[in-house]
Amino acid sequence: MQGDKSAYVHDVFSKIAKRYDTMNSVLSFQQHRLWRKYAMRQLPLTPASQVLDVAAGTGAWTFAIAKRLGPGGRVIGLDFTEAMLEVAEARRERFPFRDRVQFVHGDAMNLPFPDNTFDLCTIGFALRNMPSAEGCLREMARVVKPGGAVVSLELSKPEAAWFRRLYYFYFYRILPKIGELVVGDREPYAWLPESLIDFPDRKGLEEIFRRVGLRDVWSRPLTFGIAAFHIGWK
Image 1: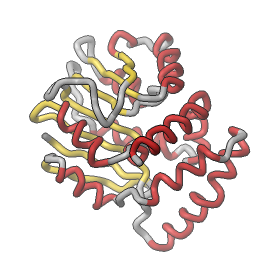
Image 2: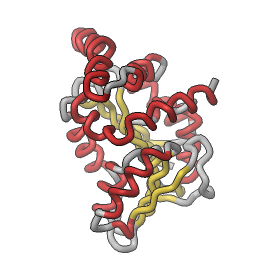
Image 3: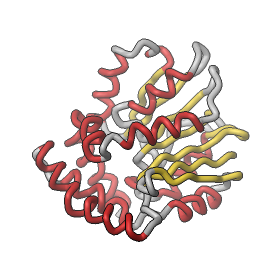
Image 4: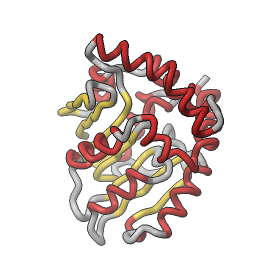
């Protein structure tokens, strides 16, 4: 089952790689930019931080982190979709701090790094796509140094009942149609609401952070709970 989900997700994101960033803006009404800005302010970064960005996609978050680092800092963006990494590498060539950035093809469920390697490990809008959110977070915690942090910025489930009904109508009925209109393929954006059905809510994800051994875990709902920021320390 996990293998089936991985193959399906790989196919979905291969199809939308070149329009991924544009579609994020359209489908979230630009809210994803505000969510990222909030998350960036919470990251415990120093100029020399060594960072792993899991499921980096086209690199938007990876590049934002790199801008906060100094010459001694480094961020590695890892993804298992080659088409996404091709877009990220093309962007890297135009990025002024490209020496601070490296992209790696790899599996988030089996990270190709030793224990206690990074000061910070992040994942943005991809944890729900993993075969196991807990398994992915456990791997992220493994490669973070003691005293380092694991961060997730992810879609979530609105907490107010009235807004949840309104949002779910958009999410399940309207969003796939917009995706089909813009991209010409309904499937990738039908997957988006499907990926949240069994995904935990904000408090449930906090508990998973704790189960994998992280401490001082806290989270914040964003835009009525459409998204959530989580952080935990090793």
